Image (tube, rainbow, N blue to C red; front, side, top):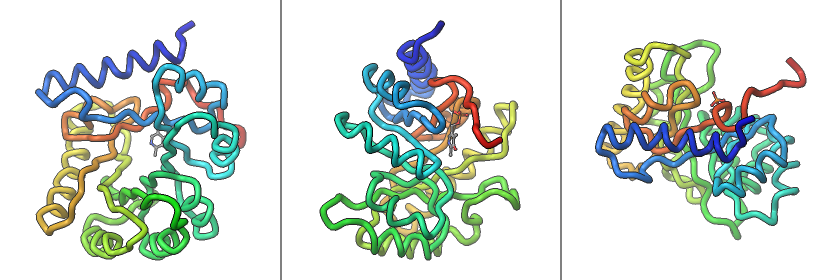
Length: 231
Ligand SMILES: *Cc1c(COP(=O)(O)O)cnc(C)c1O
């Protein structure tokens, strides 16, 4: 059986192979381990192998894990859908949010972020493939939302996130990620100080890094297949 430490090393190899091929510096992509549905034990195993940043999508599950892992110096990223009645708990407990796509939610998070904590790092999720069912702000509405979020004092707008429609074709994968990079470049040209492109998962992290990802969000390649209880 492959251990989590071995799987993590394999993912780092994949990341570093692309970085070398594109002459991007080693360490310019952060690996976010997506631990949703996986156990406290699995997270401790990953942490023991040096992985300290974790992504969660389901709030109650995430809060249970956070309270049991306070002995470790972990960074928590919220990457799931955000309902308004969940913003207080998210603002109090997380370091990053990748899935912000509405001003109303941003304003609530801004009001609810405890003064004792650093500003909450946020990425705006963009609906890059234009799928009606997907969350994310439409590209044509992104600039206005970004300007508004950038003015909220308890949030730190860091960049953009997207989950493109799945594809097994490298060129198609790259096209979606390039579109997100162009949107980030447009916002930077408008004067926003942004440094983060959260894009790429287990099946498409190579394409994402080729197009400039700075954070890849990887679950399956580290922890194995997810078993959903309610599916
Ligand atoms: C589950 C999830 C991931 C991880 O996906 P894998 O294919 O298992 O690597 C990444 N990002 C988001 C937003 C997710 O919900």
